Length: 265
Ligand code: PGA
Image (cartoon, rainbow, N blue to C red; front, top):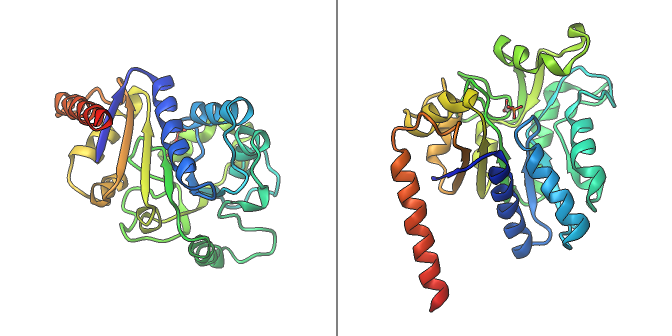
């Protein structure tokens, strides 16, 4: 696990965008796993600018989002589909028919949405890079505490805490869903590279428990400790309670020196 502590949210967004661009340089038809919420917004804005002004192209890219609410009418502005269109897809050259969320359309069986999503991800060759935010309770996607660490895409009941955290986005609380369909933890773990972004002091405890605590379903993001390629990008406030803070900075410094010496050869 690479724990990279950066000055602020802007620096986190910039570094996240670099990691996505590196994948695209190697593989124009990359498959990205994407997240919604507040955290990745600044990174998406950078990708939009790079696409508009710097020749970055998503023409051959496929995306799979982590999750979608269950029970919102199609086109609802609070749906994660609407969020992705508004914040990213409408502003880049991606083919929207290659963008997927675990959506359960009208009349579809929500119990079948999960297995169908898993099959679709497999049929596209799996996810090269998965972007994650983290909930204050350590959730990734909507895998709330006590989610099976080997779970697959399925319906989840949101915790009251998650519902409260997202209440601000719903004008009428009666329309806020309590259920979602989310990639499972095993689905996320199948990605080739996982990039977790966390900014803000309200994420510090979840970050500490997930990086430095034991692997536990009580902190679902702690499962990432068992993945072989994870980059955790944190701003100072999200990193503020890490016990090994000095060590992470030391590692970053040694890596920088190593890469510089390799480039000089
Ligand atoms: P946020 O959500 O980026 O809006 O904080 C993250 C999450 O709950 O996974």
